[in-house]
Amino acid sequence: MKRVLLCAALLAWSGMAAAVVYKWTDAQGKIQYGDRPPDGVHAQIVEMPGNHAARSTTSSVPDSSTPNAQNPKPAAPRDPAAQDDAKKAVDDDVAQTREKQCADAQDRYKRLIEGRKLYKTGPDGERQYLTSEEIDSERVNAKRDVDSICNSPT
Image (cartoon, rainbow, N blue to C red; front, top):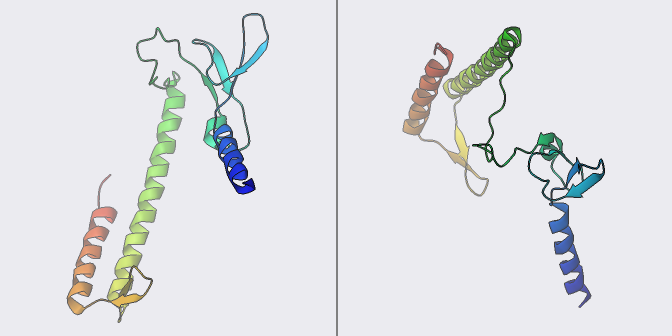
């Protein structure tokens, strides 16, 4: 019986821990808490044990009279210099990611060329050695990956 009660209490607690709680100030200046703030009120998500870190950002709840209240689009920066800086940062991130992908593809191709007994890990964790035809096929695929990733213009 104690186990059943403990299980029920843990289930109830986990449901409460996953709940999102908002904090806002009402028209009289009093701080209010709830699971849904009123429409058009600037609300902040309250950090609670069990909440995800992504939920801890502040958010402004859109007014329900706006045309796209369910999926508002983020506002673009109005300053051209800020847009240029953001575009440059994105381009740098893309270039770094592409370089890493290219290096990984080249490393995989090099291992397939230099390796003698190549294997894949099976579903039970055991090694399944590849036949000569499978090795050749993997080498061709790896070379194709290197060519497409490293030599693409974008």
